Length: 84
Image 1 (spheres, rainbow, N blue to C red):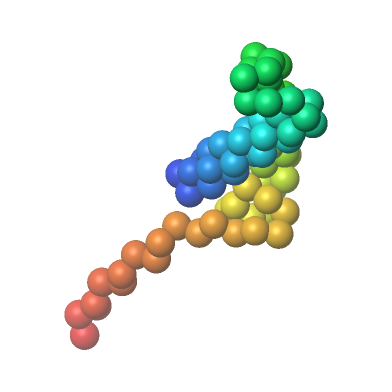
Image 2: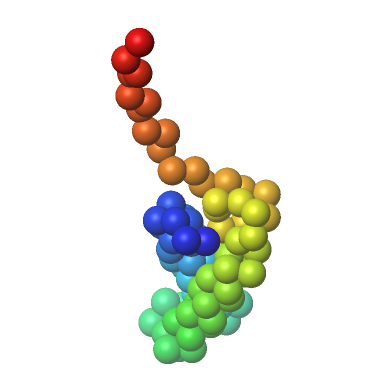
């Protein structure tokens, strides 16, 4: 949870979840694009994004990624040759 890779992956996941929640709210109304209550749709997407962030934090123990089964590792740094 204390790595940059974790927070990058968590941010990406929360943006995707926001979009999915907003689109789900829009399609659930079965209205045209001009008839959608955009404030309510954004509110539902925002709540979904907050829940995605909280889920990532709650499941961050043990792995470097934001999920239980996923690992986002920092890129390996090249090792320095040692003098013999």
